[in-house]
Image (cartoon, rainbow, N blue to C red; front, side, top):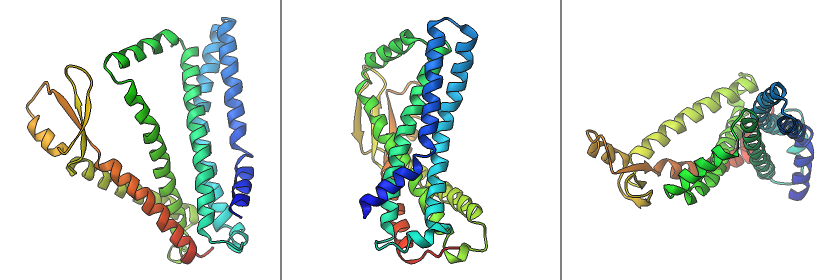
Length: 274
């Protein structure tokens, strides 16, 4: 049954999102073709449009994911979805996995559009090559791979907050408020509260990365917190290292699990359709 949910989820979400991928690919092709034919005005125009469409791809994917989650579970379709012979939280599992894949693809499409658009606007490969050379010169090349898990965590964190907010908004106590309004307000409240806690934990928890700023770019784990680092270097104009707190990232990982778990529990027991 879970496999059928995956199949149905992919089929339903693929009605819109790939259409924007195709538009992005067409604009990218036009931008590159205009560059080959040296059509200056057309290259700039198509590159600017490509940049906008690349951003729109990410936004549209996010909107489709939100609308699909609400419509399939908490609108009239929800009566059918929750009547299926499976645990309600399995809907969350299937939607989360499919949505995560779409989000990753959209991020890659957005980045590809960004690079092609910059190329069309005059930022060629030599500039990127010099940037990469500088990164390698400071020994930071391997650390670029850390961006991948950070992006994945950010997407999961955002999805967990969205699903939690939409599900919480469909509990009986929020029925007097519109579904969209309640979901948006709850999302904003959840996001702000988590950001505050994340910032505090990033600063005070003694778990961080120490980045050397002299004699190479060396990174090591340290038990120093950012408060101690700031106090020790408050009058130091040329610090020898920089401390980046990891307490916030640890909190984010925990909260992704907590929010998904809580959402699943509410779906199983405490959600009522409008």
